[in-house]
Length: 145
Image 1 (spheres, rainbow, N blue to C red):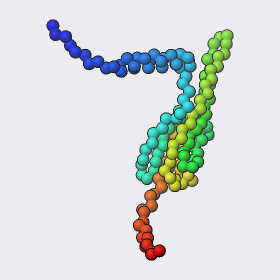
Image 2: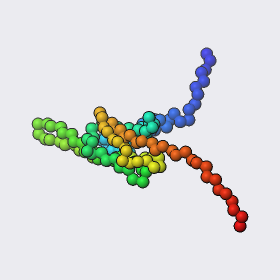
Image 3: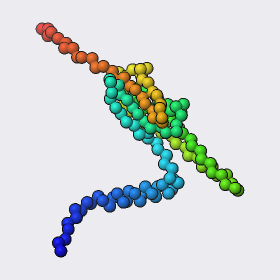
Image 4: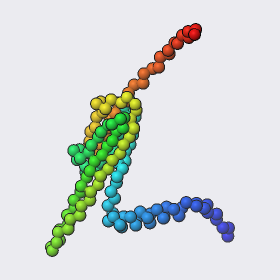
């Protein structure tokens, strides 16, 4: 009977360690994870940069989109309440989350032309890409000194 060779992966054990650490943190936080950095997709489409961010359960009035010095910042706050009723008591669990994300925009972006919309828990920010001006050659005539 011939033995089989198994390829050794030195990083395979790290996946198990990560899962154990994740479970430990979930136990400490009761499974609720407060995310401080909003995850985004950045897409270039039709001369626009499209920023999409998942915002499930967050009202549009709780989201702030600002531009300052060619930096787009998305931030917001969300408070969630859960109630569980029983015969003898009322238990209320609240979680508060705040998030922020900043992205550098191309130079000379017009902040007044940026549009933000929400639909089905997704924030979409459309940023028109400024057109690059073609460089023109400059002729410099030397003079005698």
